[in-house]
Length: 464
Ligand code: UDP
Ligand code: G50
Image (cartoon, rainbow, N blue to C red):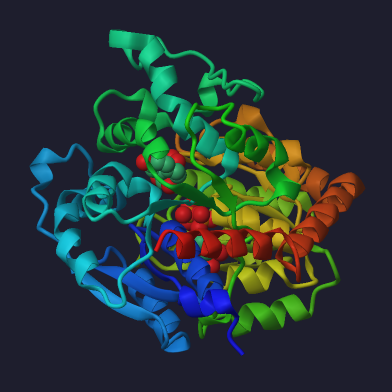
């Protein structure tokens, strides 16, 4: 029987607008599954064109698994690249969506039943908010990184304004009220280069966070209690809307690919906790020299390993990238692959006892979910700020002196030594297990996730 409230307020209809890259799309689709679970009507807005084949495949799998989700295509205007100060296809796609945002208005208005809210990606804020405002439609942001990064992002305009005309040369360490200082060296490097597309978007969007009705974020108390408390207490910036910790958003069945049998077979043959998994995410390709140092380091560590290699040339064979001789030596103790892997499955395998990671945020949450200790080696963007969370939460260790991946080389000997340290640490293992338990509590019956979604759904119903 329907409760009286349900009769008065039917299930809320929410539209989701992701932007480019697996790191942004994946948490949106995981969020969609949670919203379906909490009886929302969900419309997924997919952009046309899309950046990568992996993204369109994932959307197809998702829609096949969730036929109740409505899909609408958002046709983007062509972007004049000469006006966009970037060569990164993902940043260019953010900009293409931003410049097409006015076309969203008729699309959103035509949806039936009428929408209760739009949840848009963090990279689209200042172009989407005027659209939702004109439609009197509540606007929520999905922040695809850590709560610490959200603190940095929402505080950034205040920090940058202190440098005045000398931005970014005059920027020092970042002192966010209540949080440990963020060293200048941890700031996403593009923000320290004048006039590039990423920095321009970041700067204009930062003061607009307070114009949204709420921020959904893929994290949980057990990992980031302090940042969440400061953000929600209005300590980071005044007028911060509610921050809803909807995490952990964890891998779902629709993400499972057809690959991986080989890896699974190999992992099944390894002793419990003996394997270090090495991967730098969907976007980071290393230089050939660095790739070979990593290979030597893995041998030097003496551990078993599963290493996902990503080269700048996608089509080049693994043997060419790693080198034939090194490849032969690597085979003695490990498995080396150069393709998309099912990371959720790998991290959940009992043979895996440690993870060398770039600290893309989805990845950090997945490691936390499975209680796998991390050796952080941030490469770009928000990853050093995420690595600080990994270290301070106890989920892993971070060798800050390694610097950014692209600029600073890490020698094989040093790399191998640190892997031994992580794999041998009882302390890290215990801490990671504790965080796993917290993550399971958060997502369990009556946990913080369920409470948060109930609050959100109630809020959306009230606004109708
Ligand atoms: N991923 C995967 N297989 C791969 C590489 C990445 O399943 O071979 C997934 C990973 O599990 C995560 C997402 O892709 O969910 C990557 O997002 P993240 O934010 O960690 O980093 P990015 O790739 O955006 O740097
Ligand atoms: C991708 C990237 C660099 C980078 C980030 C990326 C983030 C995430 C949060 O996702 O910092 C964020 C991105 C864009 C934005 C605001 C916040 O405008 O390559 O730093």
